Image (cartoon, rainbow, N blue to C red; front, top):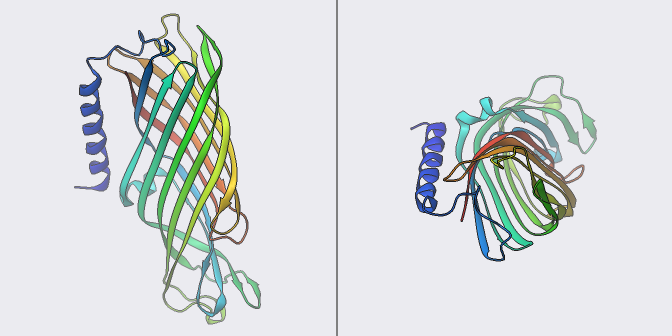
Length: 282
C-alpha cells in the first residue's frame, strides 16, 4: 500500500471510530461549553503545508554545506513514511487547556547546495551539487487559556504555554564540489531540539444566525532556546467550520515557523498550507 493510501486509510479509520464514540453525546451546536462542567474537544486533522528549510551540514575537510529545501505537498506526499496530527482540549468555565501534535517522517527530498563554507572562506559551487535530504519533524504544543471576552458573536481567549520542536535531518550527496572539497559521495545529519514559551490568542467568531457556521482562529509567538542557540517561533491558524449533529468539519490554513539563527544545523523552518479536520465535543 502506498504511503498516501496508508495515511488516508488511517485518518478515515480514526475519524470513524471517534465518531462512533461521541455520536451519543450532545451536538456542538447545542452544547454550552461555559456551563461550569468539564467539556472536551478532540480534533483529527490533516495539514499539507509547503515547507522551506534552511540547513547546515558539516562535511569532510571542515567544510559545511547549506542546502535550502523547498517542497510542496505534491512533491513530498509520495515520500511520506508516516504522519500523525491531532489536538485535544478540555474546558471548565473560562479556563481551558489544550495540546496539539504534528509528526511527519519524509524519506527523501531533492535539493541543491547553495553555498560551501570552508576553513578558507565561503565558496559558491561552480557545478550543481545535488543532494537528497530526509526530514523528521515532531512539533508538540501544550498551553492553557482563559476567556477574556465572550458573547453570542464569539469568544477570545488569552493562551500561554510551551512548544517543542524536534527536527531531524539527513543529507546524502553524490557529486564533486570545487577543489575536491566533496567526494563522489558523502552523508551526514543535523539534529535540533528547540523549546519555546508561547503567548497568544485563540477563539472563534460566529458567522451565521443559527451558529452552525463559525470561524476558529489561533495565533501565538514564542521565544526560547534550541540545543545550539536561541530560537523564536510563530504560529497562526484561520479556518471556517460547520457544526453537524455528530461534530464539526473545519477547513482552514495554518502557518508555523521556527528561526534558530545563522550557522545552526537547522537555521529556519517555514510550514504554510491548507488543513482539514473533524472536531468532536462532549
